[in-house]
Length: 134
Figure 1 (cartoon, rainbow, N blue to C red):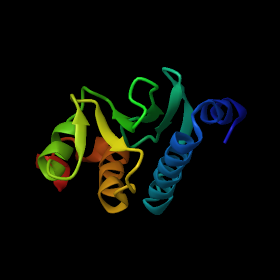
Figure 2: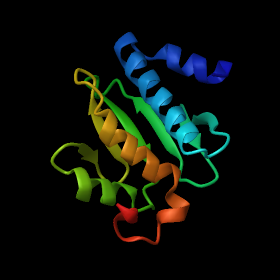
Figure 3: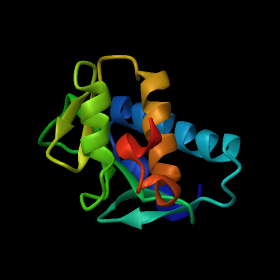
Figure 4: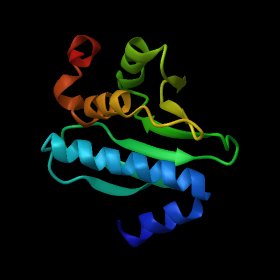
C-alpha cells in the first residue's frame, strides 16, 4: 500500500477502515487467483481505486453521510450493476447503476462479492456475454 492510499485509509473511522481493508484484500486476492497481472491501486475521486488491463475499475469508499454503509463502486456505463442486480437482488443492496451497498455491521458476503469482483476484473472479456457469462 503506497503512502497516498494508506493516508486515505487512515482517514476512515476504525470500523469502516477494517471493512474497506477487507474489501481491498479480497480485490487483490481475486486478481492474483485469476492471474490478471499487476493491479493499479490509486486514488480516484478521493477513494481507493483498483484496475487491471482485463477489467473495469473498482472503487471502494465510506461516506459520513451513510455511516452504517460502505460501498463498492463500478463504472456506471458498464453492465456490471445490472448483472449483479439480476443475479443477487435478494442478497445485495444497490445504489443506482454504480454501487453495491454493504452494511458495516454485517459480515461481508465473501462468496458473492468474489463473484462480482471476478466479473468486474474480467469485464473486457465478458461484456458481450448475456449476464456476463454467469
